[in-house]
Image (cartoon, rainbow, N blue to C red; front, side):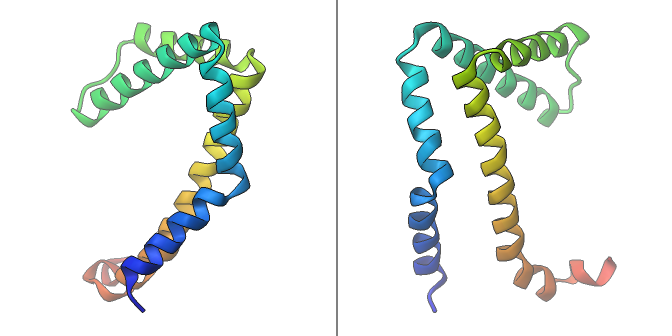
Amino acid sequence: MNPYDLANQLADALSMHPDIQRLKQLKMRIRNQQAAKEMMDDFFEKQKALAAMYEAGHTPTPTQISEIRHLAQVLGGHPLCKEYIDLEIKIAGLITEIQQIIGEPLRIATWYSEIQ
């Protein structure tokens, strides 16, 4: 078994997963609604900036945190945006589970498993 071939098969299977297909549809519908697109762009730009701050070891200001929370609430009031965000979270859970399955042989084979 070639792991690269299996990884490509997994990628193909994921691209056909109903949740990922629905996510693509929602993305296209949101792109066609200017107000929804701008809200999503703004939210994800700010989310990316906060993630970069955390990765750099910095703490966001209360204003920055409040702003992203407010944007999340606004998105939650828009049906397409809410469905998109909810589905993205669900897919992230699926990917996490897949990563755990894939990582299990490495976890068992490395020293890391000895210190747990």
